[in-house]
Length: 379
Ligand SMILES: Nc1ncnc2c1ncn2[C@@H]1O[C@H](COP(=O)(O)OP(=O)(O)OP(=O)(O)O)[C@@H](O)[C@H]1O
Ligand SMILES: [Mg+2]
Image 1: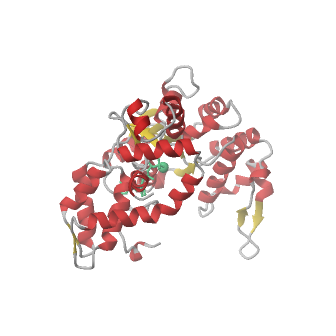
Image 2: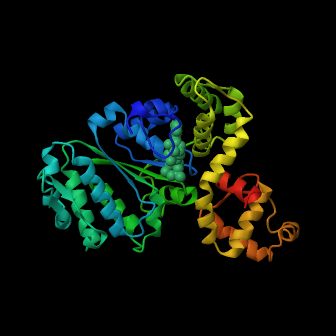
Image 3: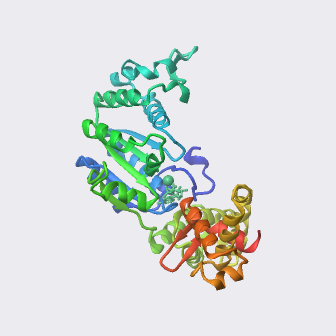
């Protein structure tokens, strides 16, 4: 999508450019300072606040683009070292492909375990990488080769590993130590490790017994301040000859605690509902809310159909409460016909683990605000 034909300026799920990205100036500066001074960063914040967006934004800074090779891998869906190596190797190849450097030419020479995937485009003669997971026979060898290759780069590199906590779930048990050793030996690359499981991430980087102890500067990410986000939203409306009442965007920000993804989803829909030349007013909020929730309904139904009945009941009970306190009390159990305190306890543990429920200072809530609404009012 080129910038010219962006109809709706509230972009969700990808990074387009500076113009559609709100603030994060201090955070970008902080990242720049760490990277330029040769430090790794551990970026830790709850889901949907904007970690991946911030990294993309940082990677779009002109000086960073000019001075570094930039690689971004999301390892959320990976379950083994083999998949990790596959994902990283592919990203490096794809990023370098359009860049005319001598370093690029050495890719298959040094990463010989990927050579099997080297195909020449029959029309252009340009090498492409056509590799399958099964082609990674010995992941540790491939990992060695990748790091050897990076060490020969003609510019420093930044590798961002998104959802880094996932390496703790790999089938192999020594991945943390293995990676740490590789990273220490490689002086050409700085890392940004980002993750949303605060507990696991903090443990990885801040506990003395762990391989990554003190190997990165920790950085948290807070929601965008309400006034900053409101100014941003009002500007985006104005640039497209529409008006947005401040009260609307402030209501949205407050309802979703400033969690960027939910706020952006709502603003995207509110923008769509506002006619050209028109004004976005408070009565449009419930309509937008309903539309957004309905647009997610398919995935919510899928999610529920895969959830064991006990977890489903507890999830809905929490949704109906909004913020649920004393969930193992007789009162709560009776009100929602739940089996027993121990059933609730074990269900909540699993729901927390799977990011469906989160624990706040005031109690438990369903993590996804839209799912919560849907469970409480429509399902
Ligand atoms: N500063 C910003 N301005 C505008 N939109 C943003 C900003 N930061 C993030 N977004 C948008 O908000 C949504 C959520 O952000 P993002 O995916 O970066 O969050 P995350 O913390 O990585 O979430 P997750 O933990 O689920 O991966 C995305 O659709 C992104 O486009
Ligand atoms: Mg993310």
